[in-house]
Length: 556
Image (cartoon, rainbow, N blue to C red; front, side, top):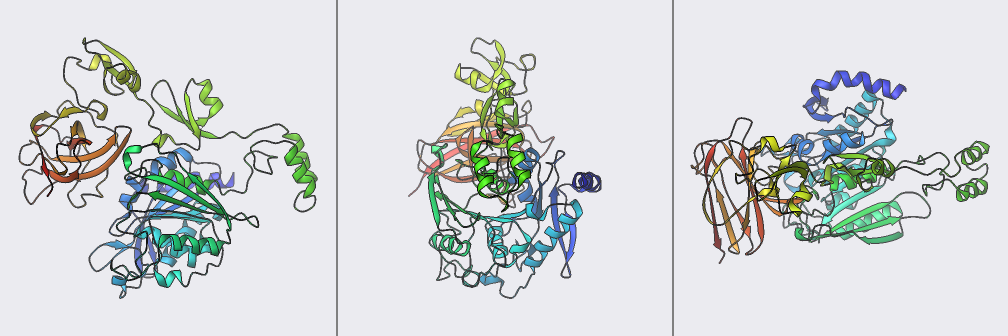
C-alpha cells in the first residue's frame, strides 16, 4: 500500500511531463529523459530504461519501438534517456567508439544515477529495474552489465556488440540475467565481428564469441535450442532462441538469433515473427522469484503433491510450517496467465483464458500482447451489390467484401464509391500517374517511423490512403507526389501483408527537388513482389488532391 500511495502522489506531479523531456543534471551536464507512466500500474510496477541508437534520440525510442503501448498493457514504467551529442551533432552513448576517443562522457554514472533517482521518486523495487537498448543503446547495455551490474536487475541488448577493450575486461560485480538479439545479415553490427576495424567503430568480436563470453561469465553450461514459428514467411528471416542455464543457480542467457535478419527492431521493422519489446518485457517479467500463486513453490503453475514434497525435502532450509500450511490451504489451485483476447466487437483485452472464453473471444496465449495481436477490426463492409453490413474485417474480406475501416458504420459510408482508405482496401495500381484525393480519408493506425528518411520531416500520415503495387521490374521503384499535390504529403512503402507490414522506405519533404513540401522516394524492389504504398498528410489539416506517379526501372 505504501508503494501504491507513493506512485499516486508522484503521478500528479509528473502527469504534465509524461513523455516530455525532463532535465536531470549529472556530472556538470544537463541530461534529459522522457518517462511514460500508465494510468493503471501493476501492484509492484517495474522500471525499464530504453536506450536509443547512435544518431537517434529518446523521442524516437519512446514513440516508435512499442514501449508505451506495452507499458500501458502490462502496467510498468518506461523511461527513455537521451545521450549527449558528439562532434557531428549525433546523440550517442559513450562506449568508446574509435571516432569518440576525444570524448569522455560518464554515461555509466548517469544511467545508474537516473535509475536510483527514479526508484526513490516512485518507491520502486530495485529488483525490478531493467535496461534495454537498440544498437549503440545495446552496446551501452553490455557496458552497464560489465561495469554497473549492481544498479540493474537484468539487461536486454538488441543488435549490439562489444568492443574489444570491454570484451577483454568485463568483470561484473553482480551477475545478472541477459537477453541478447542479433541478425545474421546485419550490415551495421557485423555478425562475424570486425576485429580489423574496417567499419570504423573500433575492433569488436563476433556475436557467437560474445554469447560464449557471457555464457562463461554467467556460468550457464546448460543449453536448449528452439526454432520459433515462422509466422511471417514474407519477412525473409526466421528466429532461433538459445537458452543457456545452470543447475547451480537461476541465472540465464537468452540468445535470439534472427537468421537472415538485419539491423532491425523485430516487430517494428525487419523480422515480424516476434516483437522485440514483448520478448524483452516477458523476459524481464519472468525473473520474479515470487510464485504465480501461493503454494506453487516449484513453479509448475499448480499446487499439488510436488510442492508438498519440495517443502518436506527442504524442511527448515528454506521451508517451514508456514509454507506447509500455505501448500495445504492452496491445494489444487492453478495459476492464471493473461494474454491477448480478440473479442467479437473488434477490440482486444489483455485477460486470462477463462475470462476470454466467458467473453466469447479468441485467446492468443499466455503473455501474448494486444499491441501485436492483429485482431480483426469491426466496421462497415460493402458488398458488390452496394449493400452494407457491420462485420469484423476478416469476415468481410473472406466473403469478398470491401472493409471500410475500424469503427465505421453503414450510415456513414458510400458503398458505390471506390475506396482505399485502409490497407486492407488498397487500390490496385501499376506504373503511371494515378489521380487521388484524401479529402474524405481517415487516419490509419498502422505503424510507421522515420528511421529510413530521417530529416525529411515525415509527419503524422494524416488522412492517409493506400495503394497495392506489384513490381514490374527488379530494380528501382520511384514513387512521387513531387509538385503534383495540393498539400504537404508523406509517403511510406511497405512489404508484406496488411497484418504484417514491413516498412522499407519513406519520405516527408524532398526539399532539394520538390516544392510545396511534396514527396518522392526510390526503393529497390523485386519483379512480381507485392508492395503497399501509403500516402498521407504531414499533420492534422493536411489533406487534398493530387497525382501519384509510379515508375519501375530495371537495374543493370
